[in-house]
Amino acid sequence: MQENERHYDVVVIGAGVSGCATARELAKTTASVCVVEREDDVCCGTSKANSAIVHAGYDATPGSLMARLNVEGNALMYELAKKLQFTVKNIGSLVVCTSERDMDGLRELFARGVANGVPDLKIVDRDTLRSMEPNISPNAVGALWAPTAGIVDPFGLNVALAENAATNGVDFIFNAPVTSIERRPEGCFALVTPRGRIFARCVVNAAGVYADQIHNMVCEDKLEIIPRRGQYMLLDTTAGNHVHHVVFALPSKMGKGVLVSPTIHGNLIVGPTAEDIQDKEGTDTTASGLAEVAEKCGITVADVPLREVITSFSGLRAHRAEHEFLIGENPSAPGFVDCSAIESPGLTASPAIGRMVAGIVSNILGLEERPSGEFVDTRRGIPNMNDLSFEQWGSLCEENPLYGRVICRCCHVTEAQIVDAIHRPVGARSLDGVKRRTGACMGRCQAGFCTPKIMEILSRELPDVTMENVTKSGPGSEFIEGHAKNAISKEARA
Image 1 (tube, rainbow, N blue to C red):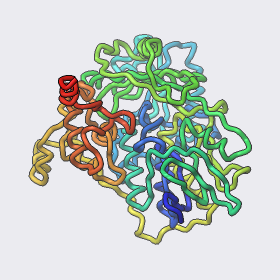
Image 2: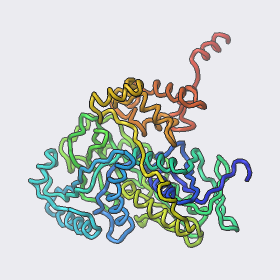
Image 3: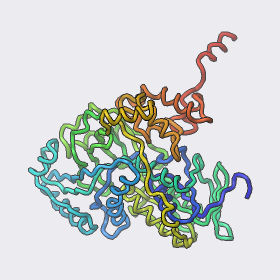
Image 4: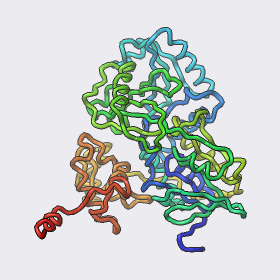
């Protein structure tokens, strides 16, 4: 084996929720598994910027992969959250109808949900709806109630899957975009990355909006992934109780429309738009897009307190014209498995997607399960200070005094949590990595006060990181340009 050359049974391209769920499921087998990711951390693409909803499963076309895996993923999500200790809340969702003439559309959605196997669906009338949501639009005439829906921490889910996979032997290689793939005569694949060549008997393509580029390197048929941008506004925790359930409008061909929902961090989120663009990195927000969000959220919910907006953001969904997940071994490239076009409800479906893809790979390679008791199926989460009583927090401080040092005052994140996030499997190496694992920087000040202290902790805890090269989100996003005193000295000498 040459230097910078690695060999695995399976390489998963992409460290989003689908890729990490697949890697975790493959870790239950005797296969050697590696996840390669173009960014510096897990959860850097579609998985980090979305509505964070656990969809019930009534929207997808009956008989489709989307429908089946949505319902399966919903059922798996709540139990998985207990095992891996990420946050999910089963608050239910309402699809609101604001016109009597559109009630037939609501009934069609109900019938579709029943066909998909969604349990306990119900159409509620105006009075029941208003009792459930006092701030619902005065034009509302009824709604589809889906009690199995919920909200989830998408970062927590993704990180938990990655950590558990790593604990069970999966390797992660970051800052490693795949620039080419060759199918060798002996049947394996050779992947070229800036971090060296990787050889694998099987490749899983979970590359999000870049999945078409990976697919087209290997397969005879060509795939086109269209980045579909969704823009959002996030409101302060002071607005978090404006609604108590996930509130949708009736869906259209472009998606589920603009929703209004609490988040698991106590905020209120409104969005998204649905705009097909060409730029696979086009996560900018626009004045027109945010104006559309502001206008459309008022269709279903009255008096949304938009003065409480603390930030806006956008994410890209990996859309293809068929509006269906693409999962399976490609006939023209044996051993190459697509896990592509995973758009909404991909977050909800991810536990089921992981099982399905791992099953396909296991059949291809004839993998065996690990001996009983070898796979660790649980994970200890990072404590959330907001969920603890004063006495519980005090007990943690007695065990580790760093729990008494609050670094992020908006979200009550302590130094102990940040240090823990850094030293875990697949640990944080950037400000955004700390943010996704602990919730630091997500509050009202949007990292204005806690950034310098988090930079100090990162540079102290990581041997190859200094204050000069701490990044927001990987190479190229360093905070420090230079030292002011050095610049002054040079000017004085000149």
